[in-house]
Image 1 (tube, rainbow, N blue to C red):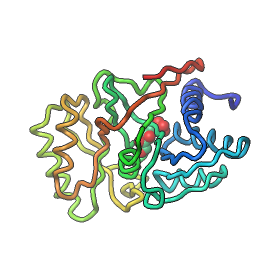
Image 2 (cartoon, rainbow, N blue to C red):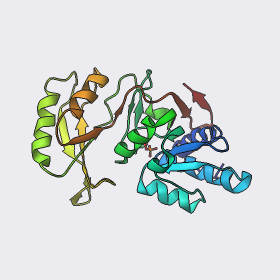
Image 3 (spheres, rainbow, N blue to C red):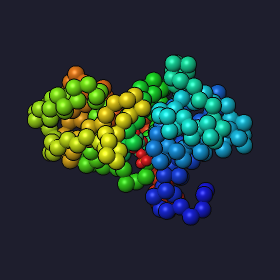
Length: 236
Ligand code: 5RP
C-alpha cells in the first residue's frame, strides 16, 4: 500500500486493490474513470508488470486510457473487444439495491456503455458514497451543445412531474467555459436532493431530445466493494 494516504484515499485504494484481484488472465476488462478507478488501473498495472497478467482493457475516458498506457496496460476500443467479462468503476453514490449515480467526473456516457457491455460490473467506493436513497449528489446529464437551452428547459419541465425534492439545474463549468465531455457534449447537473423513483427519472430524462445519457445506473451494477479509512473492506 502506498504510504501517507489520507483515510479517504486509503479507503479508495483498498477497495480498488481488492477489485483488482477479481481480474483473471485473459479477461476483457472495462476500466472506469475517477480517482478510485485510477487506483484500480495502477493496481492492475502492477499485476501486468509483476505477474505478466494478460488482459484486454477498454478504458471509459481519455484520462483512463492515458493512465492505463502509463502503467503498462495496453488498451483497445470497445468495438475491438466487442464484449467484456468485467468492468470495475467508481461511483458518486450507491443505494441498497446497488443503484448508482455516476458522472461526477463527466465520463458517464462511456461508463454506461462499457458497463452495459459487461457480464459483470463491480463498483469500488469509499464508505461515504453509500446512501439510503439516491439524489444528494447532483445527477449529471450529458446534453449535446445544439439547442442546449431548449433541452435544459425541457429537462426542467420534465422534473416538474418527477418524484424528486429539488429541481435546480446547473451547467457544469470548467473555469470560465462550459465543461466539455470526451464526446464534445455538455453536462447539466440536476440538484434533485432525493430521487423517489430512479428508474422512472432515468427513463424520462433519456426521452428528451438533446439528452444523450444520464448518470443513473439502475440494474447495471452487480457488486459493490466498499473501502474504509482503517483499511477494512466490505462486499455488497
Ligand atoms: C466519473 C465517475 C466516477 O466514477 C465517480 O465520479 C467517482 O469518482 P471518484 O472515484 O473520484 O470519487 O462516475 O464519471
